[in-house]
Length: 210
Image (cartoon, rainbow, N blue to C red; front, side, top):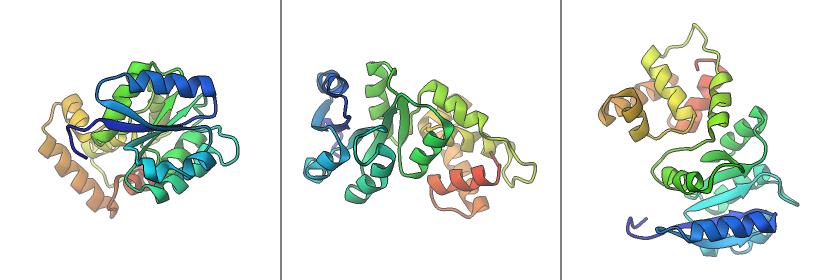
């Protein structure tokens, strides 16, 4: 994406008031533009490829095809799009299904609008933002196995990745440089024999390495 171009955002939300509210608030922030608004996945599917958004705000509870079931379909239509889930629910089963289906982040609908625009910026930079309560839930679901091949620092970094933090943010919070973070991530992938962030998180969670 051209860095000077506005970030284009599409909204899939069946509640008209919320849909219009998000559209108005995001569309009036400098650096963002609304590519399209849809009340359902079925309505979005007809036009979303043409609209070609950078980021999609996706409601979980949609009429017809649910947001969770729509996620892989959206990723098939637009492989490079970042999908941010917006929901009133924060059950861990829904969260993990959304993340495994390709969601870039997961926010509850009471998230302040300023944080939503920040989250859109964050996913564009490689992060995976979550509401604070959701990030806590993700961390609490991890009970580390003593058989983990990862060092304490590698485990710490993978936990940070799993809660959606970008490499830049991890470096800042752990007071290490970006190259060190990249080196740790490379070691994590090598030890777990995976090639992507999603696979690393899934394998580590399944085996209770984090």
